[in-house]
Length: 450
Image (cartoon, rainbow, N blue to C red; front, side, top):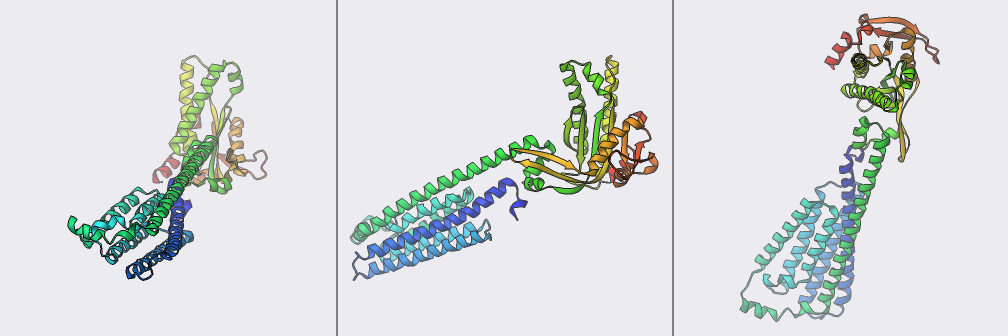
């Protein structure tokens, strides 16, 4: 699955997994290289005639070379992007197999029982492996690793034999080699490597946290400027595609309050705020019901778009239904105002369907969602033309045919030469437009089928 198809959180963790696998591979290779150099140096001071010492040196070299190879494979897999989550379990198991095999052979070569597993230098590699595993930030993997090492070491200890105190005292005579400067220098080096890895883990974890916080802040900032209905776009991480923009066939709806200037001049600031708020609330409710995106509110008007987030065949039908719901809601609101002795209110609605540019223009500090094109102008002109035709709603022929409407149920008003447009456009109004604009039967059937 590509990053763009992932949830933002999952994508961030996947990128962290890739980077962690690379850095874990680097940590393995670096630790192996450092210990190989150290073993080469300290081997110069070890007894050359001791067969046991020679075997221990060869065993350590082979183990570290294999450990380096595991790290190299993990690094290359992650770098090529062919990494899969279960791969970490493979490399962890390989680490445990190498370390515990070395532990078993070390005890065997030194002719020691399992009682003495803790004095072998290789046992100090286990904390380093556990620390490096933290880079992956995967609790289940960390638990698996801990259980794996505990079980593997237990198998080695039991398999190597667990003897009583008397026999342990006899074997102690041959353990002096494990407490000299060479093995102790290996232990000190491992402490340093473990500390460095933990520093890297802390720095890496802090970096991931900062990236997550930065990404969250960026999305929150974008959410303040983009319509709330575009939240799925932000959540799906498709904001870059939105910023690039695209041309889509969309349904467009403009609505505006009629004769609002004189009404608004007669209202107090508080009453005007309440009035506009009541209007917008009805528009938002209709948009939410029919899946429209409110591009913007402009004073006592609004611009809605259908078919941005999830285009559907019934976008045009839903736009018309939304417009009719707005008319019905405003009619009821107007009746309530008249009953309360207030001025009645009416609106004009224009709806069109066509191709338009849809995108978010600007930078991350201030993005503006924009719908541009001739289709937008047509919808706007239709809303304005409702005044000339003295009807509450005008719908273009394109919108009705795209919505699958039965045109016999609509009243044709002829072809209109809209201002700023050379080609005429066929316009319609509902047969019941003077009765408040209930949903047209033809469009209702389409909506039920969709």
